[in-house]
Image 1 (cartoon, rainbow, N blue to C red):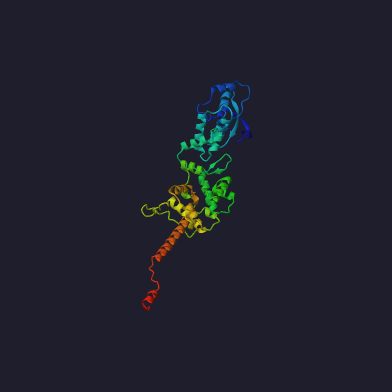
Image 2: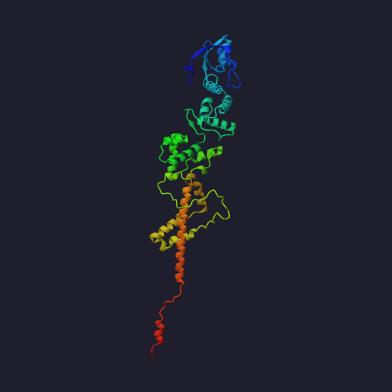
Length: 370
């Protein structure tokens, strides 16, 4: 608000009401006397026209009274009383006697209550506190953090309070319309263009649209959606590979039965067994044998490795990883069954009786002449 644009009017002091001042301790008498003893003309005071309450200039008003004046120069402003208080805080923070920290904290709490849709940075710019302090005061003043909608920043643009929620919304937009422009993604998700660009890039790389630090911070505040709320097929529209629709999806809605649903993990193959296989010339001297040894060494997982991999899978790729892992497991299981069947058949042939020995050898000796 540019007060210089408002016309100055000479107004009777008796028609003005005391200020709804952000100063908890009231006016400072020494400062009033200093202004009254000065020969310089006093700057115009600011008055809220609907209520005729002084917004800024209580020290100047008292100084004018001490000088014996009956009228003062006034610039009138309109708006709600809450907006008038915000203006009072802003003007007092910019010039004149500075507000104490206690005054700024009290003013911040009041503005947070009257303008909950304003961002922390916008309120901080008015009160002179840091955005982090404003955020802490907002959290301590209200438990209903998740009920707040988008907040308006200093540039007048509305942005979601929950950065994670905006990124999740953007990932859904990208899943529905993979060819959408960044401007369309940002508009539909209510986020900035830079955030939309980052979400699309993270999804292209197979990463979680929400960075770990942001997800952790929002979860600590109780405002972060669970990872399971993310669309399971977000990344499929960006993946040029054909979907593995032949794999039967897992029913995650049914509760797990600890006694029947979870298979017993197989024992890990000892390293000495793999070492022995690697030294076997029949394996290491052939191309197929070397390929087999390599695949076995790569795909064997220890419990520690399995846990680390679980922690590293982003939520929006979980369904894809489940399908890929099950395809790999089914292929290895089929390979094991085929190999076991071939081995049994070979053993069966080795144990078969030798009924095909020729009988004419003994008969020839039996009927030979003496």
